[in-house]
Picture 1: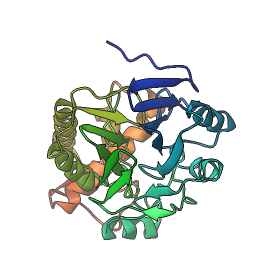
Picture 2 (picture 1 turned 180 degrees about the horizontal axis):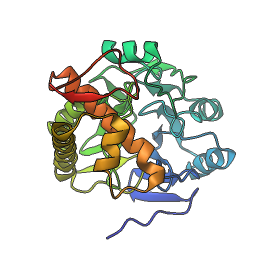
Picture 3 (picture 1 turned 135 degrees about the vertical axis):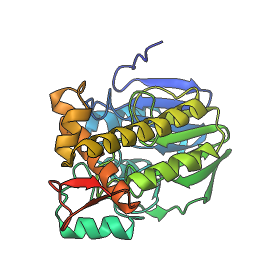
Length: 300
């Protein structure tokens, strides 16, 4: 059954201790908007406060019961549709903000070098001003009331991306969604890290995933396999295209993403570039000279 989103600002109960408020920021990249979750009863945490919006801030506050206390604000990653409201919400409810770190925390040396070169562009949508009050390490456990939350570092979409597991539920941020695959745009995104994070979640059994966009993922194991296989299929398409002709990411994307609306082709190009960089790191493709968005790749 297709997912039917609630109205923006409405508070929807998903489980006895999980409520969701949809932020008013629909777009081709955010689907119907950002899901802000309230987890717990009595003493609660808020996951992904969302973009700057007076209406959304008020909707979150209205969704809280008068006797509830917000003990923590958790952010999956520092994109502008997830974290900008965190500081204001923190001031209003007197709760600390937790995340893996600032926007570039956990970035690999190779991606840091590409960022420093400036040749790939990138940085779109990043909340560079985000600074959590507390950082969470991979595997760290946070006790909030009756909740036991496990932080799982899942870089790939962004280097500071965390998922949060509570019991048999996992809040998957932008890493695993039902409606679309994650955007991987280097140097912000790292495909090799993304694939490793998918494998990591495959060893973390869960009944349901609650993503930051779209409806719940009700068959997590199947969805993880589907996403992993999708990337392998895309990789094979790129390899086949390179076997026929060398090309830039844009040229390869135009030939592969033939069913994608033109407005989304730049995003598809960034995804292809992520694959090409990953293939080059693996020694399966190569390019001459320094790397840029217009670099021509060929098979090794």
